[in-house]
Image 1 (cartoon, rainbow, N blue to C red):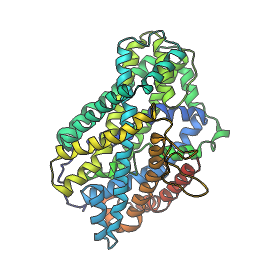
Image 2 (image 1 turned 180 degrees about the vertical axis):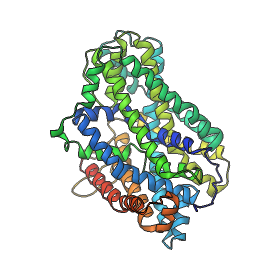
Image 3 (image 1 turned 120 degrees about the horizontal axis):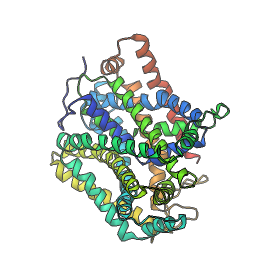
Image 4 (image 1 turned 180 degrees about the horizontal axis):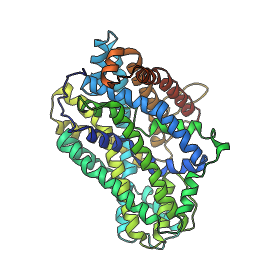
Amino acid sequence: MVSDKVSIHGAWASRWVFILAATGSAVGLGNIWKFPYMTGMYGGGAFVIMYLLCIFLVGLPIMLAETLIGRRGRQSPVNALGALALESGASPRWSWAALMGMIAALLILSFYSVIAGWSLDYIMGMGAGQFEGISAEGAGGAFGALTADPWRLTLWHTLFMLLTGFVIARGVVAGLERSLRVMMPLLFVLLLVLLGYSMTTGHFMQGFHFLFDFQPDRLLDGVLAALGHAFFTLSVGVGSIMVYGAYMPKRASIGSTVLAVGILDTLVALTAGLALFPIVFAAGMEPGAGPGLMFVTLPVAFGNIALGQAMGTLFFVLVLIAAWTSSISMLEPAVAYLVERTRRSRVLITSVLALLCWLVGMGTVLSFNVGAEAKFFVFAVDGFHLFQWGAEGGRNFFDSIDYLTSRILLPAGGLAFVLFAGWVLKREAVREELAIDNPLLFGLVYWLIRVVAPLGILVVFVAELMK
């Protein structure tokens, strides 16, 4: 019998809403600008096989751990870990791990909002035909002009934070669930439309071979990359999946639900590659990764092919939706925690936190222009320096927050959550939540949570710190 606790924030109407929510949290900018390129760069089908192996051995066990903790506790991650630790006879200080994850999520949202806001600018530009017939130099100049203009960046950053706060403020059912029921199917439809269009470019098979040609001699080349992406792509380590698990129906199968999320996240990433790379090849360009692919290469490609204006506009709407669904999952853990702690209205708490993220995000806005040379956050090998203004070799504000969250806080949070589920929660509590009757299957899953996933996270942790 699973826990009969009920979240004060509400509950998803069905397991499929959780799947939409968790997939929306997982599907973000990295699925579009990073994973497809990594697939082509690290051996195509060989990388896909290695990535799927890492997903099943590391990514999904961590997601299982977060989801079962959330549903067992039926509270915000901070309060859930504290309460479940006491029930298990452990220290309530385990809640500090969730507090760290919550802070990491807010820091990520602060700069994610700035970058996601670029898609709003490009929706307008594509729709107005500003990229029609544009050259690579012209597209690079347009992107440079955007990032060099703090007022323009501030406008889109502000609008994106308002969109995120609007959904969260309306609550779990009226805000999150209703929005996700619209946004996620729309994301899938737009992706399929772009995929269908890419099949008409005459370069679809070139893109297919770039992604999937199996190179067995390169099977081990992308192990670390696959392991790292398997961890980061599922939005684990910050409590987003945990708080979504708190709203999950009692009788829903955690195992099959999390498996569906992992499959959908991977399918979206691969479909994005199949949709985008033929368009890039059709324009006679080479694929790349990162912001350059999305905001320089693709605008040139869309600007120089038939129906490019319409398809380019649809693409950046797709980018906006992917970013939006991810951003609301970053804000929800902190909002849920402060509503539980203060008993203040969700609207007030959301407004305060969104404003805080907006203010911190202004540091990222300025990092691309007037504050680009301000170096103050240093991690040195000899003599560990945390904060140091103007140090040689330091990072600007954006790079510093990105380093702190992606290389330290996220892996640390993921490790703490999976260790809690595997070593602090009682074995019977885990068995009840997972509802796995087969003892051999449960033993395998429990071993993945207790041993394999923590080791995988440690590898990611070390690999990220050594970059």
